View (tube, rainbow, N blue to C red):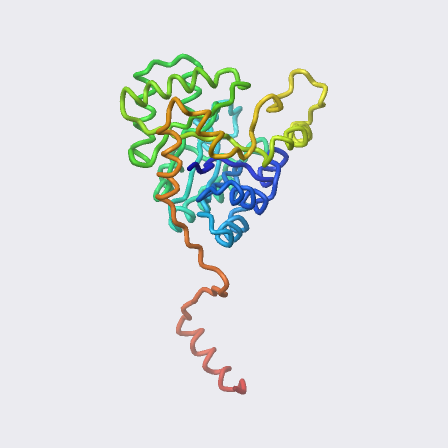
Length: 304
């Protein structure tokens, strides 16, 4: 069995393609026990996804692909030190922490159209969350790409393990050879995992449902980036497979590291979210003595 843990719906605006209900339907067809959505910087589709997954008998994993600014999320200078991280809520408390992170990132962390958090904010709201190290733009993969030492990389892994706990931080493996540095990143992460016992997990960084959707998603990406399809220098995922692939495909891709497949089930089993809804929740406000006197004065004149 396999569970997708890094998935972008159409709420990853002009980047992902497909409604949450369509992803749930496809996961059901593939007989997957759970599914995550991790849209870029937002939770727009979280509740819609949660209800549809529950109805389908699939464990809903509500997540977020967040952007961390090393310079601080309120920084307004040129910000080119950005790291991706994937955050998954383990329960309702974790879901509330995701909401807090997104709220802060939009109210105070927006820069060049991108909501950002920082490490201080991540530490504050890390409770009841599972962290994945992200794609090639995550901090650990970036340090591997730029040739940082094992000692430095292990220090940064230890930092994340301190935030989330050693049981709830995973090094993310992706099989996307179209992204030039991915094989090098995977090799390093697997070696570090086997030498030091770090947890690894396989994802497919999903951006659409079927491989046949790749061209449509590429067009969306061009619109989002303001680039032409004919632009040879534009970023593109057209040469890779970023679909909601079957468990069998994922097991074949990661046959050399089966623990990365097993850990998707381990993560799924850690997550149980129960979001109460269907009731009107009105806050209670205590009246001051003066307000109480006024209330009693006028309530006597209101017929019951």
